[in-house]
Structures are given as structure tokens and as C-alpha cells.
Image (cartoon, one colour):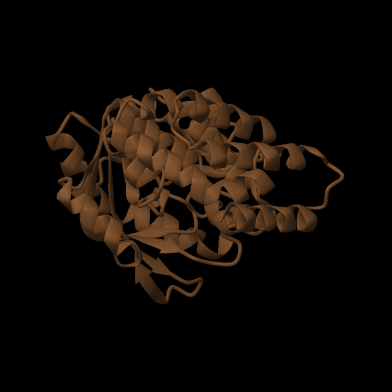
Length: 336
């Protein structure tokens, strides 16, 4: 396999056990109207028929790398990093293996980044489909209120409004809808990114908005798959997503608190989600964020003591989660 040294886009497909959808994904990449790209396929030690499907494409001149992990890495963002470090393109598309794209996805998104050097990434509207490919909804429809707010900001996310669109609400539902500028991606802390099981995409988007800008392209060019083996769904069930969201807040706290709009959205997000953060989140991350908020005088005294008390209970490992939740709600009633 060989690829030209000067290419515009590097496309990374990180796959794990998505044999059912993998052929449609690869074909939707190879059939793009914009053809100045290389394709890197990374398989994270799949246990299904993924390898057999991938091998059907070996020898394709567009494919620069096919890499099989001998053991599972434990996180897709480690695969992201591996692909980014091998990528030769000016732009990077991380095309998740259970999704697919319109044929003109690259043609449209490359034009946006090429016209504005201040942009670190662009993302499109997404169709959500089920495991059979049946249409469910679009991202802009399901989050219409936030997309209307984004329109008033010129469809641009930057360091001033980043918390509004990427913290208190995550309006980018799918990484496959994003085209990154590689130079912007290289400003992200890869050591920290590798720690994420979920929400590493949020970590990356927030960093991109702080260091550059993000543009929304309101065209339906991406198809996001919703199915029972979806990683995000599993992360809500086991609580991993709450731990990772806390890590994002702690990492970017100082940058987000330079603007009043971001401060407001960070505090409100923590208040709304604190029961989940305390129940599922990391104790030390909660303590760290709570102390930062208190030092900035961004939370009222009653809420501070309420959360501190709950954290004290959470630390006692012998308290069952069911009992702990009951205590939370009793305290809330008292506070009211």
C-alpha cells in the first residue's frame, strides 16, 4: 500500500466489532466526490467478522494503512491518536465505523476549512438512523433550540460561547460529522485524551474552540447510527460518561472562566448534573471542581455545603448507591 506524500485529507476509521456496518462505512468513504485523500483503517482487536471485511479492501490505492491491534486498547480515543499521528493530510476526518456519509461530505467540508484559516474544525447536520438504516431524526431537529441560538452567533463556536454549545449542551452529536484541521488537532493534549473512555470527542471540540474556532455547516451530510451497542449508551449505563465529563470541566476550567457566559453555563451544568457526577463521577475530580467553583465565588453557600455533604457520603464505600440516592433526595427536599 502506498499513498502520495501531499494529500488534503486523512480519513481514519477506528473500528471495533462493527462488522455489520463496516462495508457501508468504507464504501461511503471511498465513493466521496472529493478524492484527494488517504484512508487509514484501525481495528481494535475485533472479535466479529471485521477483519474479513477489512481484508476485502486490501490493495486499494486509497488505503495507506490497515492496522490490527493484537489486544484491545480499551478506548477509541487511543485509536484516534494513533491515526492522527500517522496521518499525512492537512485535514482529518475521523469516520466512526458504524456511521456513513453523503458522497459530498468531504467536498463541502473541505471548502469551509479552506476558505477560513481561523477555523479548527467544521461539523455538519446529521441524520440519525437505526441499525437497519431507517431514518429517526436529525441533530438540528432534536436540538432545535440550541441550533437556533447557534444561528444567532453566525453558526460559529469560539472561546466566548464554547460552554454554551459544548458543555451545558453538546450540539455536536457525532464525531463522524466533523472535519478537523490537523494543526488544530495537534494542539490537543493527547496524553489526557488517551485517558477518556467516553467524551474524548467533547474534550477535543472544547480545545479546538478555545484555540481556534468551529463552524457549523447546516447541511445533512452525515448519517449517525443509533443501536444497542452504541458506546455512548453503554457509558450512560455504567457511569463512565459522568466521570469523563468531570475530567473535561476540570481540565479546561481556567480557560472557560475567562468569560462570563462560559462561567454561567459551567456552573449551571454542574448544578443540573451534580447528582450524577457524585453518584458516578470521580471523587477527587468532584472535590477539585467544587473547590475551584467555591474559590471563584460562583456557587451559593447552601449548594456548596449540600454537595460537600454528599461527597462525604459518596466517599464511604460501604454506603449502597440506592441508599445514597435516597439521602440525596431527602436533602433536596429539606433545602427547598
